[in-house]
Image (cartoon, rainbow over all chains, first blue to last red; front, side, top):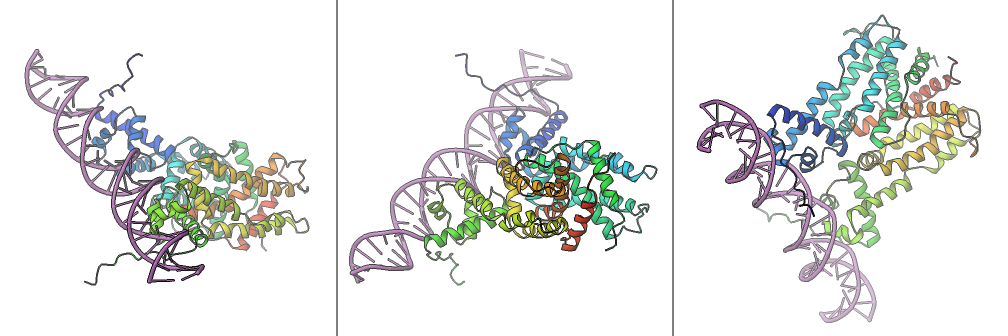
Length: 209
Length: 209
DNA sequence: GTGACTATTTACCGCTTGGTCACAAAGCGC
DNA sequence: GCGCTTTGTGACCAAGCGGTAAATAGTCAC
């Protein structure tokens, strides 16, 4: 009967450090339990009481907004743009390397789940993100498929765009089912990805009907 | 200043009819607002007060359970099994017809959103459903790809299964983004589907490396 | 009409939630 | 030690939630 443990008072931290921890914890916690999760639970998870959160974020919504900001700031890796646009590499190589990295990010980060929760709630946030997918993945891939440099002026034709979406969906579907629904999907190796990319490239140009 | 309208008392209905309406309303409402939506709101949507729901369902969970039951009972169309297994039709034709019908169901029904909400909450329900997708779509398609009848004994090889998942993901990704995230994805026509199916069939057998 | 039955509602309980505020306590200059 | 500032907390509020029970009002048999 050693005195019943009362939770110790949280260590006093400089504001920047505390804020960093809150944001990091919120990302992980919301990714797991959804954006409707309780601030008290999140605070306990952080070893802190919930009023402290209100010292750093005026409302729960402001905290979630901050999570979104972090999402847009860190989600996309700048090198991917260069990789996809690198005309010196054969398209097969570009696509294989890009999707290997992209699928890794999908599988490992908390972002896919946050994205899903936000998309099911209000659709504005997810539309914003998907628009950037179109601009940074689909359009470059479609343009490369047409053997054209991605030029602001000439946009890729609808058939190439449709094909680019097909490849994207084909490759992302597995990780999505895995992370969102807990399905025992096998993780694609770089060889798997290359195989699908090659098969996909074989479909171009589309056979005349 | 015509007397402030007080909501009229709900019309008295025979229990079966009322129950039907509650279930139908719950499906639509939960699909829209998620399974965490409030019973009071659902009841108001039905033109009824929320204690009435408790005459028909002991708890909120019981109501949701009923929604799931309806899901499993009506989601899958029996004819699809026959269509996918119909050895008299060329595989191209079977796949095109099946996915045309399946994607229509994905786009039009409330089920995709309910499925997503349930999957994000607890993953058991969605795993149950995805297991049936594997048994009723992926495995038959993979077996057909190997020109084998779908026999209980011989299961299709992993490469064929992986390809079948790829086609499934490729075709379902668009509707999923559309219904879940509100993306302005174009609806695939039967011709679009056929084109993707043909390109996909061209990838078999896989080129030796 | 009268009474019995039951579908529906009003009023309520206990609990949880986002949010507030006064106060405790840690650090720091002196 | 003694204040002063600032991080962190206990206690609280109001609103909203799932759920309950007693009261109300349609409906039907007679």
